[in-house]
Length: 112
Length: 115
Image 1 (cartoon, rainbow over the protein chains, first blue to last red):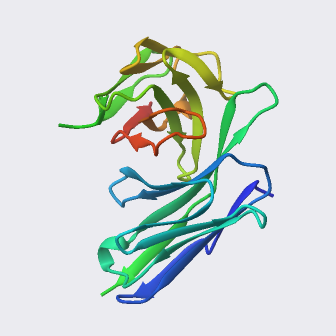
Image 2 (image 1 turned 90 degrees about the vertical axis):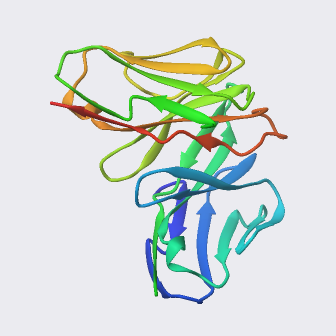
C-alpha cells in the first residue's frame, strides 16, 4: 500500500461541475503539495499546505492534519482543467533530511 | 523569461554513453531538485540541494551524480546509460526548504530515451 493514496484515479466531469480530488497519507508530514501536470507534460505547483485551507481562483485546497487527509476542489470546472493532479507529502527522515512521497495522480477530464 | 529552464528538452542516446542535463533557475531560490517520471507517469524525487549542499539523496544508482556549481544551477550527470534510465526528468526549485518554504517551480522536463 502506498504511503500516499489518491482518489479517484480517473475522473470525468461535465463543464461547470464541482470537482473534489482526495489525498490520504499514512506518514507524519511537514507539508503537502498539490501539483498539476498538463497533457503536454509540464508540471505546475498549485499549493503547498501545512494546515488549514488555501484558495487560488477556482481552486481550493484543504488539509486535516489529524485525519491525514487533504482535498483539492475545483469550482465551475472547465475543459482547460483537464490534467493529472498529483498529491505529494514532505516528511522529515530520522537522519534529519527531507523526503518527498508522491501519490500516483488523479487523471481529470472535463468535457465541454 | 523562464523561471526554471532545463536543457535539452529531448535527449536520445545509446546505451553506455554519458550524458548531462542542465538546470538553471532565475528565481533566487536556495533549493533545487531533480525528479524522475517513469513510463507509468509516477513521479519520484532523486536529489535535492540547498545552498549547494545535498539534502535529499534518494536511492538512485551512483551512475547518477548531481552537480551544483552555484545555487542557481543543478546539473544531472548520468554515466553508462541504461535502457531503464529512459524517463522524463524534471528539475524544480523552491525557497527555504524548511517549514516556511515556498511552493516548487518546475522546469519543462527533459525526455531521455536510451536506445
